[in-house]
Image (tube, rainbow, N blue to C red):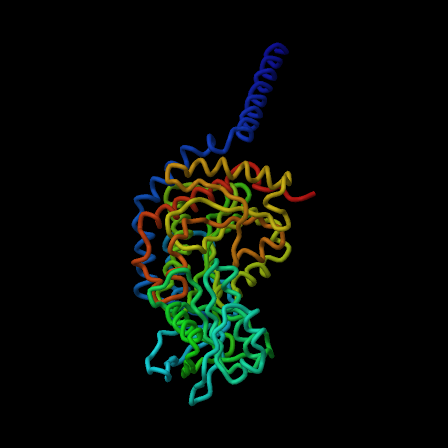
Length: 475
């Protein structure tokens, strides 16, 4: 009897040892090996998926643009929540958010001298209105804030400032849209016209948000085409006065009710730990909000739907969020962060797609407070894991992992320690269409859109399922 018991104990010990060895092997095996078969199934399903494109077609064609406070945005929010339930995502809900409600109204710009002609234009988000009769004045053209200040109040007062600033990248150039009206107002200008923030133009104006502080002096402000800004500049260089009339009815109404849309696949082992991904559901009140940012939202949603259909349930919860009001307030991202409270520590990673749906390249990665170029141990270890996951996406040429990433909607999470990833594309034409009437479904290549679904599904699933967190909490 003792011999049998002894043999049984030895056998049990062997089983336990083998199980332990298996777990250790799972942890040590490269993520590429652990998830190669799973990733192949996910990518295969995404590349032949039709339902995601049908959703994007409905959103852009039948609902269209979705400015915060508009009926179109709230129609989109309600539709998405119901459709996520139909897709059998878990815990679908709408998270209430109060959003700014700016209304464009009627608007126009026309040259009244030395010739008479109308100009394409778009008022800038948050602009004030002109007087009922409009504003008619000469233009003063500058290429920088330094030029503006050098001219001073004597030459600016009573005129309309035109910023003809060449596009040197979105970050350096967009500040003229953000604060240009306030800078002009300080010197007595009566209006502001901005060369649209784009590197290419087919006579297309681009709108976007201003950054006017409460109580700060400002003037009516609108974007004009790059071509017209350049013409005014050449006329100014030739000593010819150009007079224009600017008319705008823009106004800010009381904050409106909106919501973030949330759905998820609940984790099988660690449901309280979260990997979140998504984009912003609002857009400007022009075009269809296709590249910015409808395609991103639908791609993230369809990524979860495909995982659900394939029966893949990660260890952790994988969540999709359509953040509201990124374009002129970022209230959705802030509300999402505030609702988490101390539970933010349970967010393992956040992925944002807000750069359009051109040919995908991979992901950029950041940890707040850590220099991406520094040899910080946690960052280096996380990059190594992400590069292993990236290898799973090499077959669709979307496995590049670069240093530096994030986004406006996940920035409140990142500031409080959540690792952030940004989906990257070639970005060849994004700023040609950005914030214009040309941001429409026809600018999206279906094959690239399906690749975006695939890469979000693979990255999201592996981050939510792998044995260890992407970044272990700082001790």
